[in-house]
Image (cartoon, rainbow, N blue to C red; front, side, top):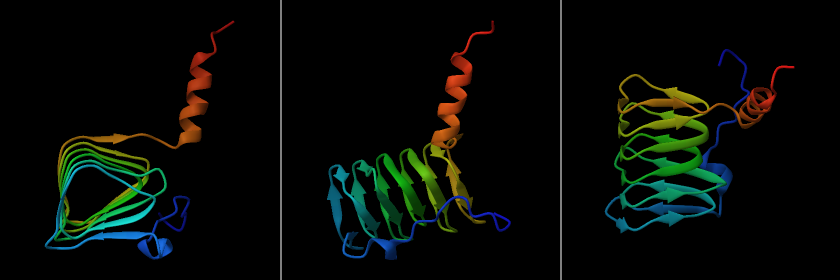
Length: 138
């Protein structure tokens, strides 16, 4: 923000050749694990998880389950918690029923959240704070 782009934004284009698309009329029931990018134009009933990648829920997309990914972009409906380890972006038509866990978040006017926001901080900050808290005063 304000010219300081310390959080890198993931884009589906950077995962060319490693993008999975759930088409608008498709419904997938079960958990999904992947590396790369997942674009949900249809419905997923189950959890979505990746250690390295991006989840994009388009304006027609629907996910009922927990999403865990470094980058998550939502412009559709999610019923379940969202864990964005690096970047979370909520567009105008985003409708989320669940808690959001994020390190950096962008939210456009019109997005709706029914749940709590939980800032998880940067991994290096968490480890630094933990080591400081573990030191007993002398």
